[in-house]
Amino acid sequence: MANINKNKQVHFLYKSTNTLNGNYYIGIHSTNKIDDSYIGSGTRFRKEVGKYGKQNFKREILDFFNSREDALAAEYRVVSEVILDVNCLNLCQGGRVGGLNEEARRLSKEKRDWLRKHDKEWNKKVSTNVSTGLRIHYENRPGTFTGRTHKSESIEKIKAAAKNRGIGKTNSQYGTCWITNETENKKINRTDIIPDGWRLGRVIRNKY
Image (cartoon, rainbow, N blue to C red; front, side, top):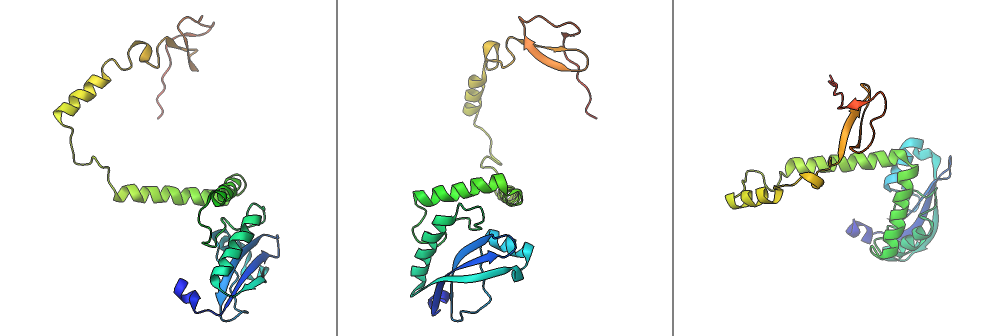
């Protein structure tokens, strides 16, 4: 992509706005034809275009630059100022200029925190992508212990470490007991008085 853009003659910063709801996206574009049909490529922006249709977006050129590098620097600066605006569709500063400095990470995190609370569709898509990615990762990468066995010395160490674990006060159930009223089960301290209509024990029902 960098080599392709290097041959372009015009570099500008633009703002593409949804004329129906005021949401907007800020980016840069390198081209040899100013009046091309390009309006943006951000992740949230593409989703917005898919939902409302390209015909409902207006691109305006904010500034021209002598090089793509200068345009990138401007994009980073301008988006940093508006990224927390609720109508801004940018997820991060972009620009590939300035790197992931502390301020960039802070603003990007705040933006994503806001999206998690206010954009359920975006949050669901991110969660699904993460879940799918992890599943594929572990399906193709079996555990590091697969096909191996513990040495006898290791087994003895494991047994020794587990000895007396969960006995007495180390047991999470220590000092408690179950009671039931035949409908509900609950746990109380052994020193507590059992309420009327309750008895020691619990009712375990078949789930099926």
